[in-house]
Each structure stands twice: as C-alpha cells, then as structure tokens.
Image (cartoon, rainbow, N blue to C red):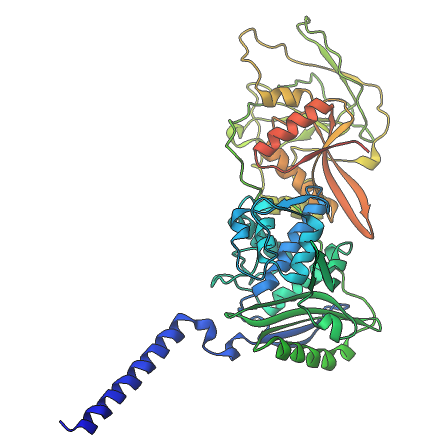
Length: 527
C-alpha cells in the first residue's frame, strides 16, 4: 500500500470519528442544538389583558432563574398568611450551601432575614438562598417544587412544571412565555405591597454591594421589574414590566444568545408595542386562593381522632334572625343530665360521614358553633361529602358548600335572644377515657383567642379552606366557630379564615395538634 493512500484513509477515519462525536454531543445536549429552538417572546397590555405580540408564546422553554419569580410568590404568600415576616430568619442549609453560582456564599448554619433573602433573589439571583428558602417553607426543595407547580396550576399556568426553587438545570423544569407573563401579572395584582422589591437596583449585604442583573431597570425608562435568567439549556431570558404615560405592558423574551442581545430584543419589542397599549385599566385581577392544598410533611403520622361528644336536642328550636354569641357553658359534674345554655339555633340537614351514610345528623349553630347529633336507630337519606371544587362552585352561587357546617361572618354577630335549653346525654360508666384531641375540642368554648388557617382574596376561598380544615379534623374543631373576617391589607381586600372561641391553653394545644396533621395555623388574640 502506498504511504499517501494510507494517510488519506487515516484522515477520512479521523473526520468520520469527529462527525460521530459531534452527533453524540448534539444528542446529549438537546438544548444546545439550535439557539432558534430556544427563542420565544410575548407582550401583553397589563391594563386590558390584550396580547400585543406573540412568537412561540406557548412553546415549552426552560425558565432558568425566572423560576425565582414563583419562589418569591410563595414567600410573599407566607408573609401574608402570617407564617413568615420580613424579619424572620432563614437558616442556610447544607444543600443550599452546595449550590453553584450565582450565590451569596453563606455557610451552613448562617442566617439571613427574609427581607434580605428577597433582595438576594431579585438582584444577585442567589441560588443558595433560593434553596434555603425552599427547604424552610417546604421542608425539602423537592416538596417546595411540588408546591410551586401546584400554585402555578391555581394561577392558570397550565404548561409550567417546577423541579427546584432556583432555576438550575433540570430537563423537566419547563414553562412558556405566556405562563411567565401570567405569573408576572399575579405578582403585581396579588402582592402590590411587596412588588417594589423587583425594582431594587443594588443590594448591600455584609459590606458588599450586588447590582441587579436586570440592566433594563437602568437603561429603559419606565421599567419597574421583574427578573432575568440564564442557563445553557435556555439561553438568556428576561421578563419585564414597563409603565409609561398611563400605559402598562409586561413582556418576555426567551433564548437570547447574550445578555446584551436579549436586552436589545426586549427594547425593540417594547418600542413597537407600548404605544399600542391602553391608558385605561379595564382588566380585573383574577381571584386566587392562598390555600395550600399540599401542606408541609408532618414529623410523624398522628393516631386517628375519636368522634366528638354527641349532643342531643329534644326539639327543633325556632330559627333566629341572626347568629349570636352564646352565654358561657355551665354544667354540674355530679349531675346525670347537665344542661347547656345556647342561643336559638337552626336545624340544618347534614351530609353524613362516609362510615354512617344513612344516619341523619342535626347541626346546631350558635355564633357559628357547630354541634352534631346522630339519633340511634334513625334512618334517612343523605348526600356524601362533595369535593372541594364542588364546594367552591356552590359557594360562588351563594349556596352552602356542605350542610355540615354553618359559617358566620364576624361582622354580623349580635347579642343572643332568649336561650333554649339543650340536654347532653349522660356518659356511660364504661366510657373510654377521652383522647387529647377530644379534650382540646372540649376546651374550645367562649374565649378570646382564635386559630387562623389562612388569608384569602375572596370570602368563598376562605370558607373553602375552613371546610377543608373541618373535614380533616372534625373531632378537634367540633365545638369551635368557623368565621371569615374581612380585613384590608393596603389597597387589597383579604378574608381571614379563623376558628374562634378558644382560651389560650386550648388554642395552643389545638393548633399544635393541627400542625401535627400538616394543617398550617397560628394562634392570635381575637380582634
């Protein structure tokens, strides 16, 4: 064989090997094959909700650090629900300290305030802080990501799935330009009192200054936030909010080759569309629930609670015109049939529990207090408990969510009319000792302390949360009063979901038991 022929064959073999290697790399990194496959953009008139521009708006894209917008949404929700404050401390975890840059570089065990943690996410896009927040709120970052995805569904982000709190690479973490703009508007609508954090230009922490990665805050007049992001799988992303001359637009750009080219594309989009925006706000913010359907994981599973003490009524009392406070309960422990003085009550048909499907139940409500009785041997038809979605739909139609509960608005309580006696069945001599749950429930009488299980944007959502809590802890809250309390949070109207009528000890023990059942709550003195 001639030497030049042999060298030619070697060169061909080398070229073929290089082509094969390039193909394998391309298959291994699908996000890197073509920058065009990462491109997407959208502009929405936030005053009207009208789409002013859309390109691949519903195509799946990796969010990168735009993910932190949802992390911050859940932080704001925790603050408004009373579970965190801006001065609360977040402890850096081992997993958080291991996060790759961008990061603050906190060591395991070091603490940062919630206020500074928010600023660190907005400006520095600190991955270590995002992980620590996720573990603080969700127990684990995996559980927190499930909460993020669940909240995305409640906000209408149907094409978004989160896998972590930071936006670090995960092939299953996807979103769309439309979904990210939906989230941007919810951040503005749902938390106007916290949205100003997104306009932070410089964050000072422990003697160092961190400039916001979002250069549009400095280079494009009218920009008031939101967030940038970059990983190799996504390219350079940005979501921006701009207000000018009464106009308000939000825009998203995905897949830029560089930060500069991404920002240039965003400026061009805004220049073409902002003049088309309306100066009159006609869009109404969507109502959204602060209720967490997937609570934090419990430390251990508690034993099932026993059924509540049965209260029997001899007659159906007259229907009162308004719910009212009942006088304090008085009972002689030596009497075989002690009496309990309560306000006039209303008999309500109740959806039976699944285990006693054919038993009728009488609900008696005094100032929102609920007591149940199941006459022995009686048979009646009844409905099975409905789903929470069905209950919410019923509430929106001003119908009872379930017949098992009587809700009282705290603003309509008035002095009670003449009380009607109700007798309590005498306990059997062989009655089993009461559980801790029953004792806590028994103590929930007239008191100046309440348990709050959430704050919501509508009264219907607050009632939905009360229903859900009662269904999960019926024995524990059998003698508590479920109420909704309207309150103003800045310019926003909220409704607190509360159970009233506790003394301090009963409130604390009941809340502790609810938390053991993975039901968030906190104790506060009645207003």
